[in-house]
Image (tube, rainbow, N blue to C red; front, side, top):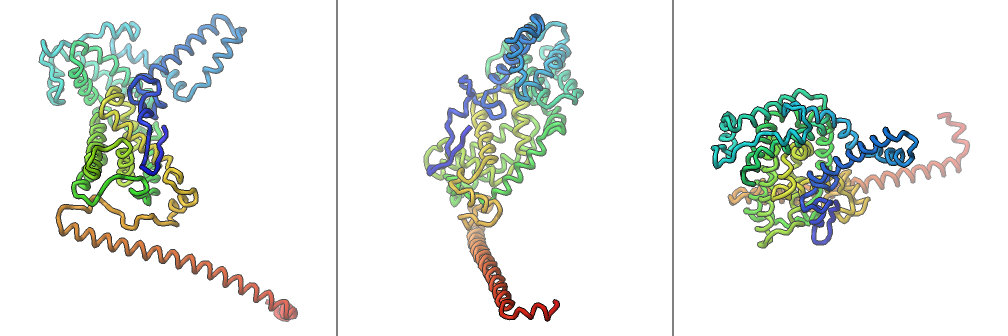
Length: 451
């Protein structure tokens, strides 16, 4: 996915946000540009091809060069496919345990009990508290039993990789969704949201940023990367926000609060709701700044600006948790899916940010990163210092003036230090020349003075 910055600001082709398989759903870098559905189907096709070739090789023997050649190519898949293939037997046995049958997974799905429609049974599918109360009703108690079994099973399988645990969760969502075929689309989505929240709230400590993954290491890497980019200004990103307007700063403060609050949530859908809330406030801030509807590129540049300004805690872990354990429909379609895809683009942009991305030379970019060069903007603005109160506005202006003086003084000191370094080098060179001339004029001095 290419994110470019030009005279008009950051630009990303909106078609690149969609699944590269052309299904119309949103893709994701974690799925190599596919949506969740196409990514799972692609992997399953690869597994079927692998199994088919293995069977042919076993029947025909190693003398069949075509089969042997094709098999050798298939064994060069990525690490992800290898992990999925090794865990396939475990997933099948898990489905059998959860659904209490010796039939195949597809047969178990066909015999899975269907919950009555809310028109005949009062099943609450909106409020989560009401949903928990309805869990004890005979009509839905079988769902409660399956959820508890799944939670206990996943908590007991700490030996599985986090990718395998994610696959088990996604398979469970897919299988249990069939129980609500008698519901309307909206009611079915609400029920699946409640089931997801019920399961993941209890599994949160087990599967969020687990020790078996590199999530914590990548969190620290992203935090350090964002700290190193503290010099990047809104002007460099072509951010179309007028932070001098109190309404704009209020929306920015709200967006900052929302994305920071994401880390305190447990359910993937609640974390996703924080991202959506942050994004809506950014859109409102852009619209107030320009007095016209915000464009997609304006939103992306502003979102990058907020990410750099806030440096959200455990950003990588939160994104990966949503990708692994959120109900896939939320990420594939709708407003939340669009906002989440843009956040992934923003993080990718920050990780790959270089000189050309900001219209800087490689040397200038390195000088900024090493702190040898100051940002073009001497009075950085913080929305947290803006307020409608005249006293606070005056204090903020005084602070900006003070910061401007500090930046100017620092510039002057750096210039003087560089000038002094040149003078010292010149002085050392002149002293060396004088000593050499003296030795040439008085060659006996070196023998008379042993030192």
